[in-house]
Image (cartoon, rainbow, N blue to C red; front, side, top):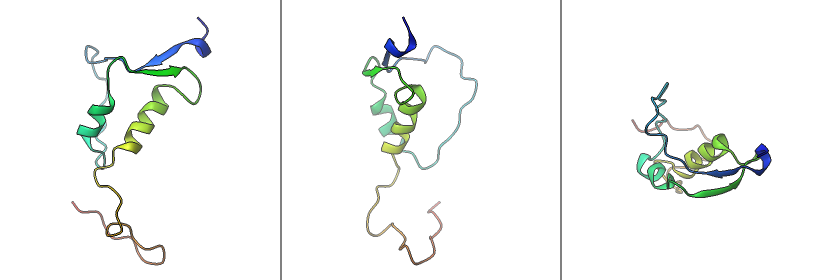
Length: 84
């Protein structure tokens, strides 16, 4: 089957040995885990729909802290350091 006709879905890679693990500090792990619905269909493969784009979209959708008026720095002022 040509790659542009290949179905894309969330698959279970837990049986594979991890070669690297990168901690992304500002991402809510529980939210990410909820997005990893094994078997969920994601459409067909394309440059705009693949493993990398899925990962990017999940990370973007799962910030640890939701944007509010209180935690957004004004455009004209300095950006405060993150809470650690």
